[in-house]
Image 1 (spheres, rainbow, N blue to C red):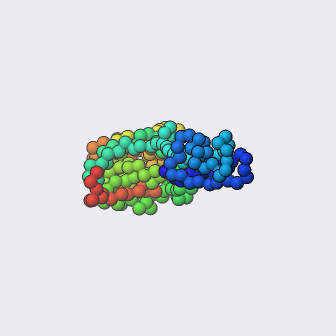
Image 2 (cartoon, rainbow, N blue to C red):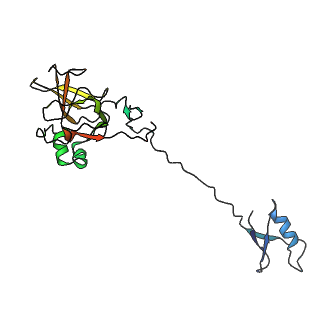
Image 3 (cartoon, rainbow, N blue to C red):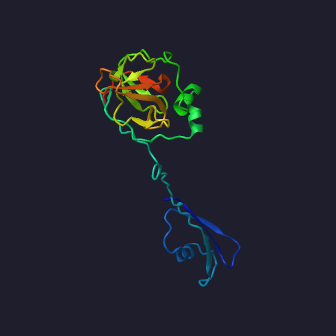
Amino acid sequence: MGLHIFRTSPITSSSSKTIIINNPIAKPLPTLSRFFSPPNSSPTSFFKTHFRVSSPKPISTSISTTGFGASFHQSNRAFRGSTVIAMAASGSLQKSEEEWRAILSPEQFQILRQKGTEYPGTGKYDKFYEEGVYNCAGCGTPLYKSKTKFNSGCGWPAFYEGLPGAINQTPDPDGMRTEITCAACGGHLGHIFKGEGWQTPTNERHCVNSISLTFVPPNPDSSL
């Protein structure tokens, strides 16, 4: 509790008195006029008391909340050790072409967004067979396990299947081939060929541009 300062002055006099009290009572006027009557005043004298009681200002708080009503991308992925067992939902990482151009290299943009094709035999993953996972170079969504990669001799990385739900297949307008794209962001990966006679579990060949991929080795310290 703070100190309160009261200034009192009699109506009939120009002089004033100042008092300091620690705990002001509910009815200050009679009490102050009783104890601070000026000398030689008549019993009928009245006093005018001027006082101001300061009270603490109310404290207001505001809570800033974020996330309500916002759109979130939550990847439907689960890991056991370093093995991906599920994939992201389709169309969950869409961006404008201007945004893609800002975050991708010119080569990545030309292939992932403009459906280009790298020269055969030039990709860094063509003859690369280490253990791990191949992610989309555009959005980072896991697409292929390394154990599904095989040597097709075609000049591009070849896989016999993608992770569940990770790859979309769309026939080309001319009907000659079937394009494969990342289901999460729509990035162009390459084409899929079926029934070519490969001794693989699916007899399919996902012919993928190396530029469309990013290899991620297993994490031995992962507890997921």
